[in-house]
Image 1 (tube, helix red, strand yellow):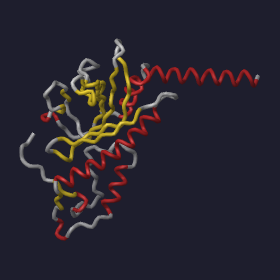
Image 2 (spheres, rainbow, N blue to C red):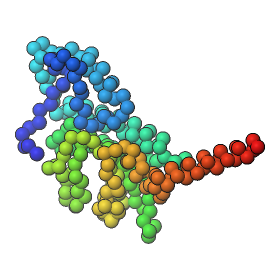
Image 3 (cartoon, rainbow, N blue to C red):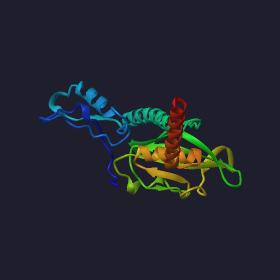
Length: 230
């Protein structure tokens, strides 16, 4: 990754020189949300370009504020999406936290839900569900930066991280590397697959198995209705 300072500018205030509609380049944070791209494009069309068409640069602090705002919305919408996809009688705990990548305030991640679990010995842990507006390898080795800076790419990803109480500080938690893949429960760019992973974590049964059970239940209900009508 380049060590040159990152400069930020407001692309909505650039002069549009193309004769075709300009596409918005969303590297994440809400690109997967239905309608978000159209909404941002509408806002951009209402922004008058500055005289001369020069780029309108913004400060890293403003870039950070905009990123936090986007990710705050993602956290809320993602929670709704995952809750609505859970099997009946299974709930998700709300967990909200937004963090930015150090020195790259246009990149960040948020948590939006948590799932309480127990190890075979009965000790508790929790899996927090996250969204990031970039792709990167995750390294949970103690002392590592968590996201491998050299692997950061444009895109987006969902991931789950297992946490357990910190033995040295009962008021905080730490990544439990004894769970799943060194503390990482899943990583995917697909919100549907992320939901499937959350269902399996929350219920202990795979999403595919839940779908089969739902089909069987619907068939049983149909047979019962037909029998009463006979």
